[in-house]
Image 1 (cartoon, rainbow, N blue to C red):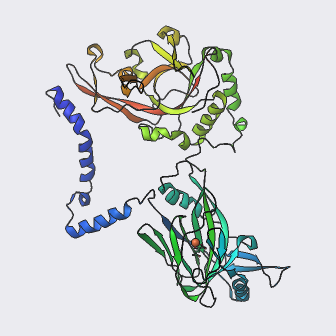
Image 2 (image 1 turned 120 degrees about the vertical axis):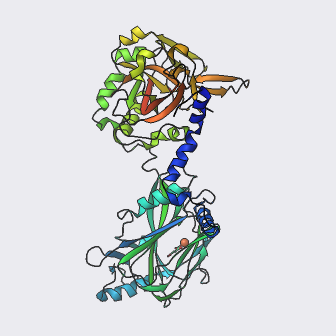
Image 3 (image 1 turned 30 degrees about the horizontal axis):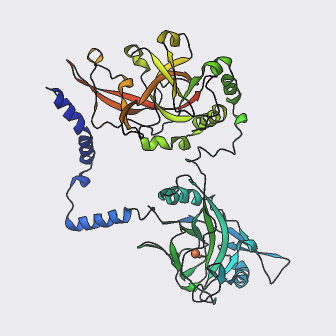
Length: 507
Ligand SMILES: O=C(O)CCC(=O)C(=O)O
Ligand SMILES: [Fe+2]
């Protein structure tokens, strides 16, 4: 492509996003064709079904786990009033010689009650089923072992937008229900489960293998409805369903056989991918590098001069947008997470941020770096100037452009470099954010990336470090060109010079 004038270049740059979109579409002929009206209706139905309702993208999910009587039967043990001093036991799938024990289990269930306000009420119209409280029985079924709890966390909890801190799920056994036409209590009318605690997020129903007809579990959210029909299933599978606690649900009449379910209360909990501030279970002192890091931070030189410590992340993370960098600390993995935790503990400050991979162009960049340490109360900045020669005399330093305040620049168009003498490269120091001063509404420009000397705990971002495109720019002059800066995710911690150091909040 030839560019005859600068504005051609700029236009091509602006069209880039749209072009990329069409290129993607063109790879798949199905997506480029114009839908016929009936396909259009079908597409509208899919789009409507995929749209989030309220704060939920998914409200109920379910699955099937194979079980066999030979290899992994489920054992239920319970206290029977008929034999107070002896525990009883039955296995699922129920073998012929345990049928009597199963019948006893059904007889030992109490009529199910439901809550009105603070009271438990027995109303046959509302709930017709037998139940046994968790204090009277236990079961060998473990929802965590078969991936059910992880699936609930990943597909159900992550599909709710209100809860950004909890990413894990805890399932607590609640009761056993038996529904059968031969029991006086055979159905659960539509209801919403009583919330058990502030973090009670939903219910898990596990249907044990026992043949039955009817007994569909219908779960509703808004005007949506999902039916879990476990009737007539072969006896070699456990079926399960999980749904949010604000979902209305009912169990339709069981017309044949016995429908036996275990119900669990689901609680949201801290979990993987959102644990940045919840590592209390970890004893940092046991980490193999902790002592060495502690000694470094205690070194007189670091204490007196202060330092920006850097650790180039060893895993790849999405880190080039404001939305992704915000919660990045919670998503760290492996060494990255434990280094972050150690810096939080030892330096009382650590953040995950973006660092431009610009060290290779060092000689092109202006030589003088400002290190700005915000003072904690007056809001006034203390600035230290470090000349390039002085920095060069510090072998552990590499100067690096670090994302300032975790706010990415949002250019309305491409950045243009107007520096006539240095047109082939955009100086990262000229990449700015525009901010409105809250006091007087004045518009001020703030450097998006601050260039400062970094003491790298491992190494500065290098060729092996995963990177993302951070900034694209047009450099023009005799020979216009597109340039780009790439960035890497890094953990940084600020150690204040001794005279400025005071306890500060971690970030
Ligand atoms: O057993 C079931 O399928 C659901 C039972 C239920 O909704 C309840 O116990 O609250
Ligand atoms: Fe329920």
